[in-house]
Length: 351
Image (tube, rainbow, N blue to C red; front, side, top):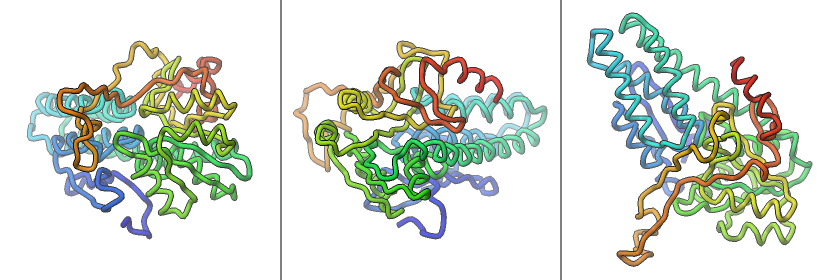
C-alpha cells in the first residue's frame, strides 16, 4: 500500500543519485511497488509499458528524463554533450507520440540545456528546470481543482473515464483533482469509474486512488455508462485529456462514446486539463493516434480471448469534437472551443 503520511506522487526525481523513482502502475491494485530508472532507456521502457502514464505525469517524467540524461551523459565536450542529451530526448519522444505534455516537458528542459555554454551549467539548469516543471504541475492541478469544484452541485454523481488523478500527474490530479477539491469544499460526491478497457485504468487506478482517499466510488463496465445516464444516475461527466486541438479533445479510447451519450441525455460533459495540453494550432486531422499491441485486447487475465489470426484494432485514444464539450477546466479558468480560442492563444503567448 502507498504510505499514508506522504502525498501520492507517481514520479520522483533524485538528482543526487541520479535516478527517477516511479510507481509501477501496471501492478496496481494488486501490489504497490516502486521501481527506479537510472538511465533513459529504463525510463522510456516504463513510459512505453504504461508504468508511467497520464498526460501531466508524462510531462513531468519527460522533464525529469532530460535532467537525468544531462546528469548521466558521458560526453565532457559541450557539443557532444548536447548531442547526447538531444538523442535521449528523441528516444523519450518516440514512446507516446500523441501525448503533447510529454513533448512539452522534454522540450522545456532541453531548450534550457541547449542554451547553456558549459556542461556543468547545463546540468545544473536541467535539474532546476525539471523541478520547476514538476512544481508547476502541482500548482496547476490544485488550480484546476479550485476552478472545477465550482461546477459541482452540492450533491452529485460523477462519471469519469480512465485515470486523470494523482497517478496521472505530479499529484492531486485533473479530473480527480476537481473531485478532490469538491470533497474538500463539502460537496457530497459519488463517483462512477468506467473500467476503461483494454488496460482497466479506471478499475485498477481510479478506484484505487479514490478508495485511498475514502471517496465513494463504484466501478462499472464501459458499456454501462449510457444505461446509467438514461436512468438519471449521472449528473456530470468529467474526464482528462492527452491533447486538445482547436477542434477536438484527444483522450483515452471510449471518451467520445461517453460524450455522445452525455449529449443525448443533456448531461454536462467537462474536460479537466492543464494549458500545456492545448495544441491549439493543430486540428484533429493533424494528429497521429498511437496504436498499441494486439495482446492488450487478445489476452485477458493470462488467457487468450481472441482466436489466432483474427485482427485487432487498438488505438490508445479517440477524438471528441469540441461541440460535445461543455467546458474545459484549466488552471486559468473554464473555456469553450472554438469560442475562447483567441483567449487561449493570448494566455499561451503570455506564459
